[in-house]
Length: 128
Image (cartoon, rainbow, N blue to C red; front, side):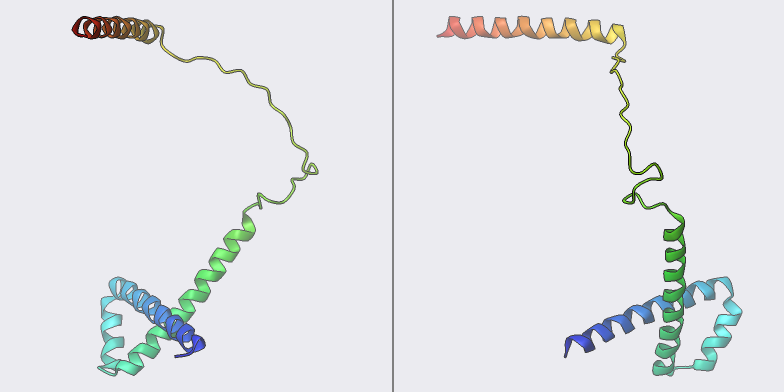
């Protein structure tokens, strides 16, 4: 199988799947219309596949157009801005936001840990 055939087969499979999904969504929205449409097709697998592929191709084109229109509406972050790409420097100062009671508790816990360490070191020296 040549790479072109593989690419075409994958693209056809994608479109058939996309078309089947779109048809399923339509069937959920209009069950009577879908049952009538599929009863006309019957059990002709090739015709069903062609139907799904055509619907998938249409859905793919609509999706591409939608994405393209969305992309044209969004500003490009990689293009220089209207002011010639000049940047502005903003100076800020960090301000601690810790609650004073938490700070005091943290200091007390730190002292307690230091005392426990000293006790452990003393016990190690007494054992040795």
